[in-house]
Image (cartoon, rainbow, N blue to C red; front, side, top):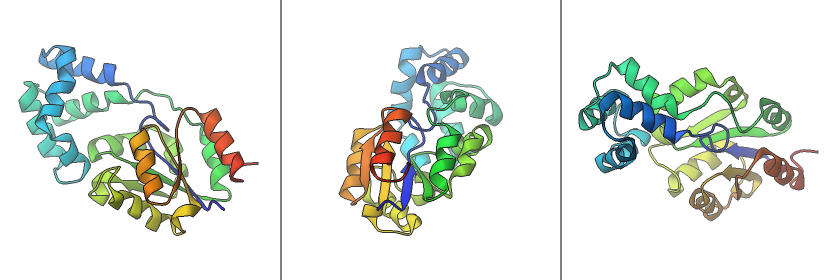
Length: 201
């Protein structure tokens, strides 16, 4: 029987709008928009940020220097958070229904620059009992360590946890840890999955 329901954040709770993110950065630094993701990836700084091995301040300075971006820390954070549009894929009512009888966790590869603003902008995240975040844990999905942290936080056996993520590799990582996991497609699909497991009526 499922005791804890675990959601991914980006691409499940909150959409990811990469075109807007890259477009706004491009406008500020003059680098062609199609080059922005390549340039960011080439720095190899994002994994350091998302595992807590680099501070937001250092990341801001180094990524700005690499892109030739002149911006205050506040301006950079606005640009960096252009990734998240002002709507969600999951309704707060659904989370509230789950929480009535089950523990509710968020499991995300994220960073402080994103998450601090996300919590402010999406009140429905207040429904979660705990956040299991890569930059706090020091490991990213699909590393076993982050799933182990989620299971420990759930306070039940791995097989008593249900997890959904939009990325297939992260779903497989959860399954390897013994968690009941499915790839996210829509809220309607997840409601049906939860009903099949007795989480929802």
